[in-house]
Length: 576
Image (cartoon, rainbow, N blue to C red; front, side, top):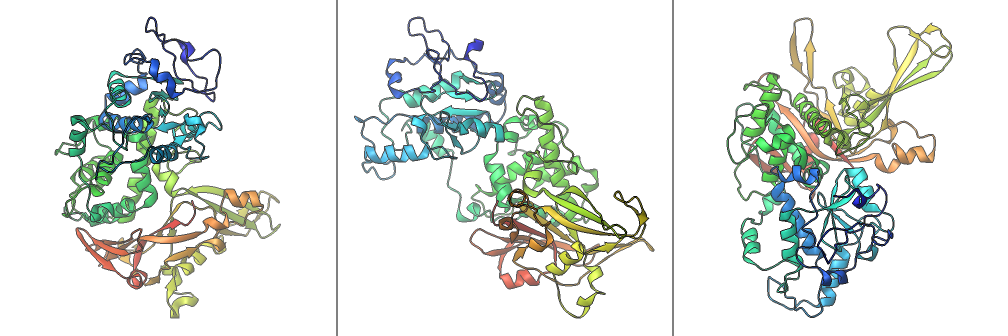
């Protein structure tokens, strides 16, 4: 492919012009113009083989060699169907009841579907449909299609005016024999009368027969996990991921991992495979769980054998059937999400994301786009005040959760009354005298100082651990703190955040509108330290609370939720 077909990043892509005389592909620059227009009336001069000479790029070839191939082809077909021109002389009927669908109604629906997600512009019908998520972007006005690629690393998009695939990383239009067959079949068949722009052919009927509508329980993710031997700590944590709206959205809409994970080539969720270094991937296992939970018509509990074996392989301390800590397993999953993302990032060697460097989970992760950091990442500010010169030194560190004390509140002023979560947060952010003398950076004196903690940046999902397990160093034993803590269903974090010094800082860090949270998940430990059991309470999108006790699911009241001795809490912000 000639380099003249390459589009400079940030400029407008122009569909390739095909030489009608000899069938060769010309330059993408149409008469030196970058207007990006490619009108449907050009199609009447094209034969079915005009675009077949456009080769695929290495990125498309690599994806088509993975198990993501079928998903890519189905998604491509749907996008091309949406791009198909509506012809005035055609009669369109509804596939369900055979009623006549007016041309004007179809045009209206098509124009609405092809509006830019960011600016709602139809961009003269020159929008790009992302192949990896529902985003539609303009390419003439504000170039939101290109901006979306830079922000999400979704490199493939379909030109809504031609049905051709565009690779933003290569900056050029690409094609493949299988894609070309789909595009020609959809765009150039004359017998299409379907309002959704699909051919009513045997192939389409076969595709439809592969799918069945999930029941209401599957749509809501109401499925339990079969206890495979002291695995309640796993199932409880997994339910908090499955019903986390932000993580759910990422698994269903962000296909960076799905398209690029080398482990996926070795994974078959339909068979019991032996987990080894070739296929051990927590993110792939979680992807399988999301797929089955939200599509399965079965009401039976799910056996997480794939994830269990993968977890055992990844972390030897999890192997076996002894009691484990749910919080430690949650941290393990977060580390794996991050590690899997970094592995793909490094394997790509800059192919998929430029100017991106690996991050450690607990180091600076300002630009990390992994599931862990985009969901749970916040900032904690530590302030030390010198009692000699009153100077304050601040340090900002990353955080993914808060660990709050319970035991220290027993001997405080709250000893005669119920403790609530705000009491724990008050203690966490209260001033504390340092036991050792502090060398002040301002005055240089070695003096007494006071330390305090505040939240500099709140995460989309606020995860809180209540420290219910205490290790006694004197006799090397552990004990459990059973003190009840009143849990608010809605949490105001305003007083625990760093006061913004300016309006701009407020909007970019912990703006007041982002300081209110709603409880959606709660993990509880029942019993003693060594012989306990984990359950989880989850709030669905209808506001109903459900208790998941392994494979048993029951409805509970909000009052019961608030009275539960929580161990882990999961709050979601009201504005993201």
